[in-house]
Amino acid sequence: MNAADMPLRQPGDLLRSLTLRETVTREDIVRVREIVSSTRFFYDHEIDVACELVEETLAKGPIEGYRFLFADAPDAGGSTRTIGYTCYGQTPCTQGTFDLYWIAVHNDFRAHGIGRYLQRETESRVRALGGRRLFAETSGRDQYAPTRRFYLSLGYAEEARLADFYSPGDDKVVYGMRL
Image (cartoon, rainbow, N blue to C red; front, side):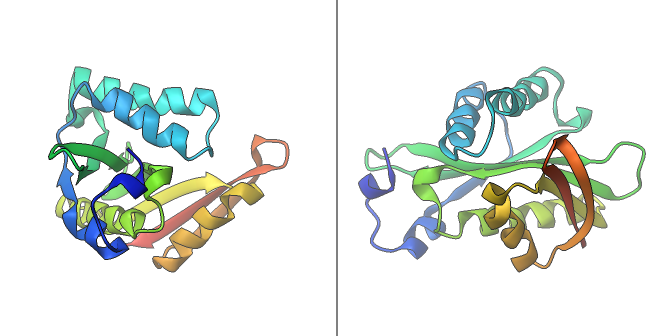
């Protein structure tokens, strides 16, 4: 089902209809692959890593460092569909520093404010866990310009840029926020 099939009249309706959940299920492996693949931003090996984090959390639990927040939306048939998620966790060997490992919204549901909502809810959960800083990294490639603008629009500051980190010409850009 794509956004056009959703029985909603305006973008705000979709945002108000979301249910957030933190519990990871086996079905989330497929859901995360579908969401991340739909963005057309990530290489196959990156998509595999996103799914492996779900698998590791299922095997070991969130205590091992990965926490998830899923956005589920109702569909026309009365069930729900996961349309976005974040994955975050405390940075090892730090006090109150957290990393945002993944944030993705299914391409069919972008431009509804879901990413912004998920990010703010993730920040709230990090604060509740004693977090004082939250960092997110992204690519410096032109394709990721909207992602970089997203973090800046939420009040994150560019804290570092590591030239040619991912590959020649592909910088790692790190954004941070004090919580």
